[in-house]
Image 1: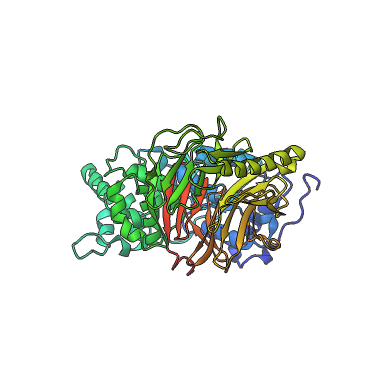
Image 2 (image 1 turned 90 degrees about the vertical axis):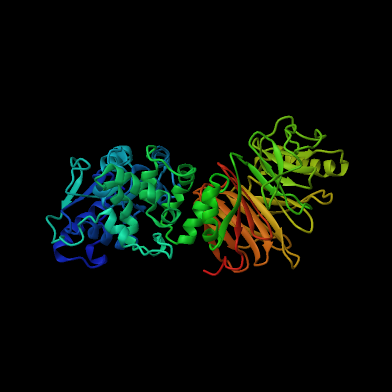
Length: 606
């Protein structure tokens, strides 16, 4: 298309109905959004007084935009009550990058090749927290995030600014909806005392935040910050922050802004716990049990008192944390065949340890082993001199196959076991020779599985999946080309009826199923535009379950026989996964090793 020549945009008649006095504004917004010449203004400002219909105009546009590819809205962030940080989390989630800091989000958006269109209602109401901090002013959000975003030529934004002077009007499209109607009702700011008085009480006289009106939950912390008397203000704020019930039910964005103020004393290690949970707590999780589960997961192994208070409510949810090992960065994770509760984990330095999957306790002592050896074991007879495992497939407690970050398959044998050494060396040799013969055979993924017999599953750059038995010698694997793109993650599971199900993920975001005695399924079981970071599978009392971690931070649980999917809102992106037949999901993330219990009896109810 010639630059400067726009294809006619969609007509307003194809959009939802709009009041006659707003139709001209609506058509201007449509024309601006549909302009694909690349020479029009990046910014569309919606001005007007309270009640003039500014938010309604953006909502009207959003309602019709999905049906027209040229007006697709990639993100809508309601800015009221958001700081630069919480705004960045919301925008990052909607753009598919997960909740990121403003700096990291700007970096991701700068590399995003899509032409992006975002809507920002209520920018003039942005800001939260103590009034003397920069985060309370909408100008901070503009300076730290919106203006840098608008410096990218591939991003455009329609922004509601009210009657404020936020964002310069030079060289932008502006509509002004005027004075608006009568808004005398609902604009008054209730006092902290009035809002707290509207909260029902428990039998022992404490506020029952689970029964509080939504308006109170949204506004009571801000009202506490507005209290005139400094002593009363401090007591009100501290009282709310010390109440676990309010932490579960109160405004997550308001709490996040207030808890960043280091001047406010807090009980226990609440600031650290909240910081860990806040990116996910602010993602519109309104169910109390789910919010309790998230906050409880962040408190385990950090704030025992808070974790214990939250545990009964968290356990009512369909998942809840069981244990955590903070500051234990795990790069590879697998259940150990033949060990009832054994979990093998590797950190990025190559140190392998075995843990009790039910409690997280270290098995076999904590002595530092040689690189590549298990805790407490003798120096390995077959192992690399320096290895950084990114995947591991255990044969037993003494031997395993490792995939190094150099893309080399390496055998590990920690005792004099010629059978294990021979079998593992054969697998490494087979794939090493294949990679020398053709780049498409370079190993890109390693996984494990099997209950009747341990398996190693290998994926390569050409999209082929190879299944090896680790329980007995096998000269060649069972192989099948499952993907058109390189394989990024693999796992397998034995089912009660004798099937061996192999799951693999490709670089194109496809997750596929191959039952090894038949042809792969013709279509993916899941297809997303993100990279899979980890897979784990188990045959549970509810049937085979697959856990899939994605690069945008989402963690999906897939019920294999029905195709139902449940999203587990974890606190961080996942680097490694393991799943037991009892429904214990072990997650390796940047902050450590965590275990959550899945309630298999209710997991697929909705």
